[in-house]
Amino acid sequence: MKRLGIVIGALAIFMGLLWMAQGSGIFPYPASSFMIDQSPWILYGAILALAGMVLVWWARR
Image (cartoon, rainbow, N blue to C red):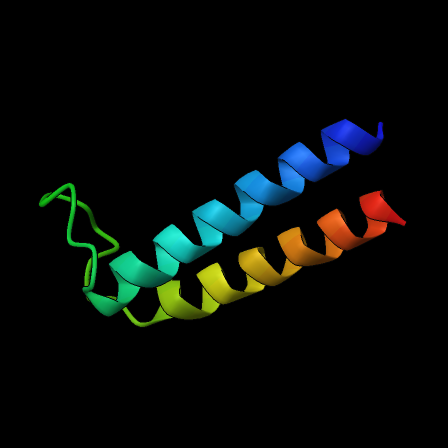
């Protein structure tokens, strides 16, 4: 369970950072993505990344 929590948490952190980058326009790929330059995705990504950090922290305790 510990390893699974760390892997899922790390994936959540990565996806959250990707959502933040797409929402801010830093990572505009794929070009047809509906998330590019849409500020709500910055918040959603931050929340997901924070949840991933909490999951990794909890799994490592």
